[in-house]
Length: 366
Image (cartoon, rainbow, N blue to C red; front, side):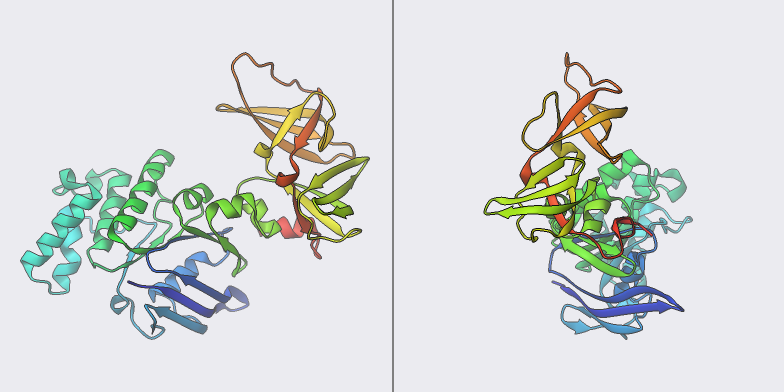
């Protein structure tokens, strides 16, 4: 079964560096997703692995074999594109069986493979339909089935659900993961949809400006991101600048100015060091009275979203933070202009060194 190893992969387009010395290993049977802002180089990277694009520097290894000069058809991969690429004049059956027939498989073997794959993908009721008779989800299922017909153990998915509506994407993402795991495949999935990546991946790679910022398990990246950019890009977070006023055995105290201080269990920084703290909106709670680890503020905006109430709160000094509160039946809603206290548990207060280029630049998606 394949392991994919990238060593110092670099690709330039004039002055633009699409991939900048990328090192990454995708383990056998691992489902890895790559996310990042538009133009960060994630699609370039997957096309380099596929052999569609050749790197300017670095090596690509698949199952321990250097494949830089190996053509795409000999790399033993299945590739699924964002733009659903089916032959419009062929039925679902003919689209799926096309690859093995072209490769010269015996007809009986090709048909057996096709039946097995169709059963796995659950599209047997549509095998006599043409692409323009199918929903977007069924079209993409057919494209996945065709990719699997190569019987490759490495599946590359380049924004495979980007052209589909939200409900279809949500269902199909889990179907693809199920297929990958049932067949014991190794999968690399490029997507702009963070929720998609976080919900189906064994590991997520965050890219920015051609480089890997951070990689880890989805929950790790959300609960304990190591980089400020990851904390901002993955999900939603509040950021406040401050200074470490004291470090003790159980953590540190951060002075945020305007008579505001917060405790954190983080004790990796030094007293007097300028820092940025971050916390997730759903990890903060509204209190009526001052208590341990609270920030005073005034509610300046409220937005209802399903069972969540999203509150924008202005702190002394003008900084604004967001708190997400679950709506419960019979509970009084906070009002615009109301003075409240925002409580954050010390374990949910993340601490980062203040970036040299400034906080705005560090968080920028450009």
